[in-house]
Length: 294
Image (cartoon, rainbow, N blue to C red; front, side, top):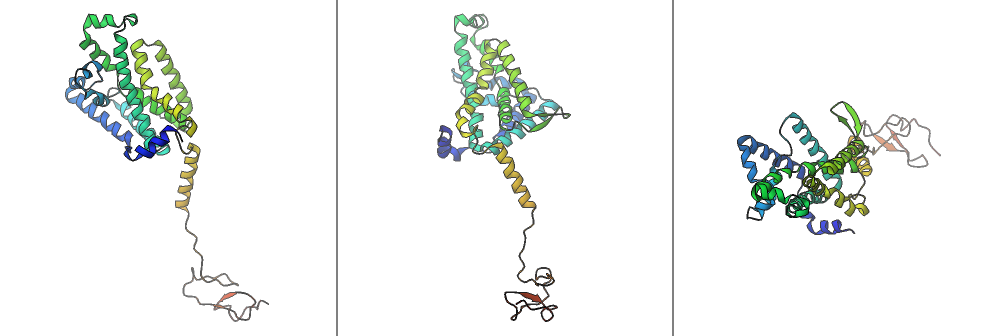
């Protein structure tokens, strides 16, 4: 039994179902705040400097920061992430999915403090910016880099690993398997990681660290699942066909000659023949006209 299984036994009852829905609702609150007073979002960002100066609510409120600006495609993408997140929760289980998302959030918070520590190392070169602009302004700027954008990306990567053969319509037109999209996203993230400055590398690396750690931890448990995606599909297909199938009723009485039964003909009468060798039952039309079985 691996570590996650042990934790699930002890803490599984505290897992939050429909976590993807709550994450989308947080985005909705963030978009609403940005429409009413966008400057108020500055009081919610993941700013490690201000957290250490008493603004501890930022450890949680940064989740409200919308990952992108609001438009039609953003709504489509949020629905897409909600859909794949819900499927992952059904497949992995509520507890495993909770661990995956909260692990991403934890590593993102950890990354913000790591960036703060690195910023004061002279060899990195960021301390010059701190001296030039001042620590409060500098960390207020870099705190804008932290959001749940890459956590959403980790949800998609987890879905691509779990359901590689699922086919989706890219731009609503082009059919493509999720595994190829996952590979393409992975390559783009790797290129972005290499080309970004130290700030971007820390943001991307820590935000996606949950994907690496989670699948390494659950490798012995078939990638975090008690059952494989193929088994999940087979179970769903079986349940669907079972619901469609009509229950087969067994007639209590059936004529050995014509096949008439009490299920289709409740008004008919049936009798066993005492002269036949065996349990042969006949309807009223053949009770006296049949040939006895010897």
